[in-house]
Amino acid sequence: GRGSPAAEQESPPGSRFVCTSLPLDAAGAGCPLPPVPMQGGALPPEEELKATVLQLRETVLQQKETIGSQREAIRELTGKLSRCEGADGKSAWKNAVGKGKDTMGDLPRDPAQVIDQLSRTMQTLKDRLESLEHQLRANVSYAALPSDLREMLQRRLGDLERQLLSKVAELEDEKSLLHNETSAHRQKTETALNALLERVSELEKGNSAFKAPDEFKVSLPLRTNYLYGKIKKTLPELYAFTVCLWLRSSASPGIGTPFSYAVPGQANEIVLIEWGNNPIELLINDKVAQLPLFISDGKWHHICITWTTRDGMWEAFQDGEKLGTGENLAPWHPIKPGGVLILGQEQ
Image (cartoon, rainbow, N blue to C red; front, side, top):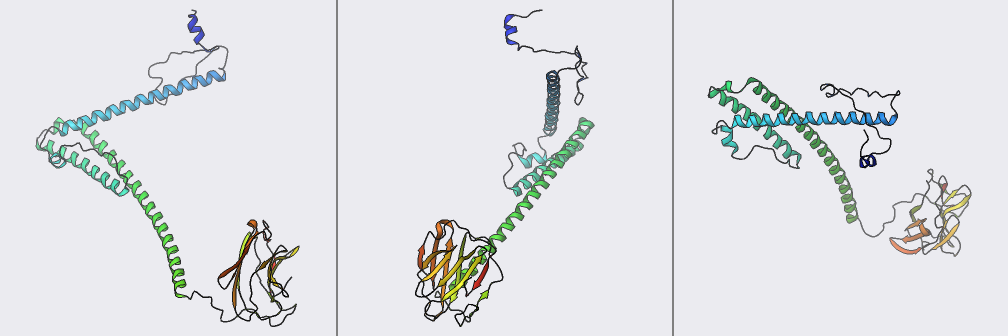
């Protein structure tokens, strides 16, 4: 028959409800519901989805009922065990445990404490069952406890023991993994600290003043265009660099070119040069910066030059003292790779 106007307004247009009768045992766990027939052939996709959703809801409800019944059985079994234990107030384990309930409570955070507490709980459960069986035998009332209940208790205790052992094994694995990670981190830290200590010891033992090398590696006795040293290895692409070297020269005027780095298309990619009466110059991509260095006194000098592509910043050091700094020397220009590095000559 027709519904009330309010019902017609609440029902969405085109909605449809299909009902089918089922036997009581037809929708058991894991038993799919039969497809719902409909006049006019196959169901539309929307109806098939609705039927599937209904079937899934039925399955979920049945599983919830099963879980609820299992929980009731567990509570009933726990109550029976408590009643059996409460039959004799003079049990040895009760005198040992005290008045409080023997529950695990919250597990501690420390894995070692968790393992110890789980072991103690498992041992306590074993002692409770053994004490209960001993009481029943001593009072000649063993028949009062049904055999099926006793077997159920033993099975439940066995399951609990297996769960505890599995949890203990997992905690042992986690503890071992944590120990390995901690050991590796400690070893890495100790290695870094040892390296720093060795470096500090070297600096403390050494003299703060710079020492000249015992012997030089490259000697250029004459000002020529054919005496030079060539570095076999090339350079990668660089965005910053620091060059340090020992120099001794009494040439006048100028010391010439201590080193030069050339790449295809640019002979002056990196050059350190002094010609005539001009100061020492650093060239980057053929851009020039004058350095406040003086080394033409026939003595050994240790010089260091730093440069970065960021704003073209540079610094110049001589014998451990910073003598100059500047910027805008080939800013944002990366040093190109694959070039040739020469000692003692331009390119």
